[in-house]
Length: 87
Image (tube, rainbow, N blue to C red; front, side, top):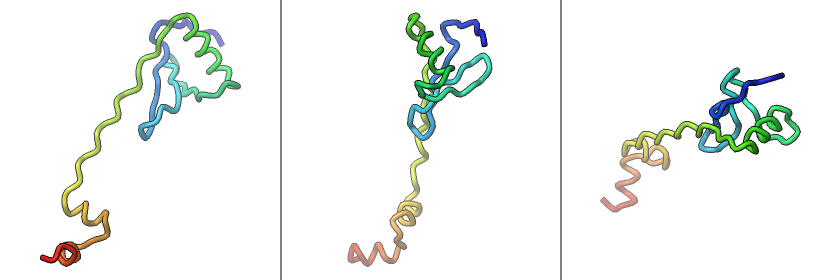
């Protein structure tokens, strides 16, 4: 396979806050960080030529939990919390 490589032919990809693959932009192929993978070897050669991939998209901040959600995550009810606090 022959690709015309430009300075932004690749983009880093992350899922769940972890850099996990590279996206080849011209065909949207996900390339794993695997030295045995031919596409990954081409990516490394492209890097060695002085190219830089686009950065991964920023990971959005999670929505803050409401007080009720915090209690539920802790497995508590309002009454149980009051009892623990001696209220």
